Image (cartoon, rainbow, N blue to C red; front, top):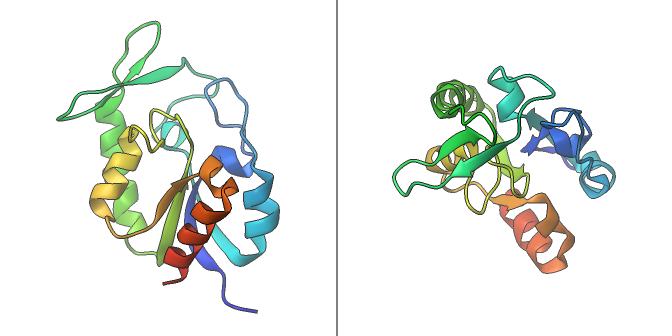
Length: 152
């Protein structure tokens, strides 16, 4: 059996209850189908940077120069906190042999379109690593392309 590849993944997709509402988004395809072949490196930018569970929902305020991570009701801006944490975490991740990143669709911190605060910094730091949102892996063509890049 081949050596498992190391892939960064959003913790909520592994079933961790880290979402703003205390829930998770456990993805059975990732856990059951890909799991035996992957050494998952979990990340939850919001919790890992020190925000509680549960917490106020946030949104990404799109600014072409620098997107902001702002709470929906109180308007608290967590961008600086997230960026400080992300810089340190990306330094740690650079020491690992990461082969890809599976991010959480529509997350203001780790979504892909538009890129959340952490995902944007990840792409800047690791521009050649394959990245995909969890839902896209249900598409056989996108999944095949992602896995081919992970193995390259």
